[in-house]
Amino acid sequence: MFYYNRRHSKRKKVRRIVSDRRSFNSEVEIATLHHGDPLAVSHEENDEVPVVCSVSSIENPINCDHKSHIRDELNAKGLVAYLASPSGGELNMTSINTLVLRLADMLTWTYAKHCSRVLSADACIEWMKEFIVQRFKLIASYVDHLLQTKNRTPATVLHTLNDIKKGVIWFLSFRDEGLIDDSLSINRGDIDALFHVIKAISRHLTKVIRRDRSSNDKNTLSGMVFQRHLPTTGLKGLIENLRQQLEWTNAFIEKIKSDSECFMVLDKDMYDMFMQTLFASLYVFSPQGRVGAIAELNCKQGLEMLKYGYTQSNAFKTSATYGYQPVLIADVSATLLHDYIMYLRPRITGIATETSMLSHLWVKFNGKYCTNGDISHSVSR
Image (cartoon, rainbow, N blue to C red; front, side, top):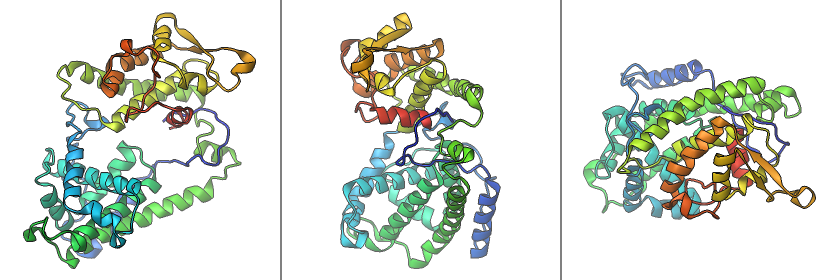
């Protein structure tokens, strides 16, 4: 985790990862046993790391474009039409896309966890039935994956579980019978076990959220640390955390560099984690001014930083008074910037950095330019 001092913002989301997993796992085990399932929730079975596109599996990443095929398959089976209808809540397209993406991610990850291979679009609906009826205990492992590997907050995980429940209800009652074979249908009783486990997990996450909100007053020192306005271990701790993260970025870039055929499609989480490390290094290893000066850099200025160790920017709030603001870069940051310019940015934009000198230097995974808020949020995470 990286932190840096920033002014208080009422719109800043509070983020914290649950540290004590024992109470979470025990509640899920009790709930499952209470329901009468002969297979209690256990993290001993299938304990190997699933072959998915994540930080923990960078040595054997899956082509992450397969998730789009799963989303397309769910759309083709009528999920989007259901969510847009009164029965599904008449959700807007943003909410629908988020729900479908979360459901596809859950199906993909649990299938990889159970079978150690990629879920194909043809097997998507069949696996969804098997997961609901027989493999529902994998939801506990998936929640651990979201909290620990993907650094999702308890609130985000709670929303994800609610979206998964909506997908299950669609599969039970509102799916288009003409699009899904009758042999893959389920009964009302088939979803009880899964919903019982989800209820136990949701209850625990709700307790964690309430505890964190009540015990961390925004005006206290502990509250400011909790809201990431102040670091917990000072600059020394920030540097140590960042150096540990550099081990992952080095392995990640080596994997990208060795992928001459561009088989490995970048995963958004992996790309965002690299960018968080890069932006954090700019502040941890070098004194910087306003974030606007960094956010508005173009590719030419990025190459200047690699060559001279600094560049000048006049795109910041008080430029009318101060003229130019230097943007400095240390050796550690220069390595990350070089890797970004040479290997990552061209994959996102499809254009070599040298041929787009006046374009914005920083781009997000969707190809749009990073704003001041995007960079601030990345650093604070």
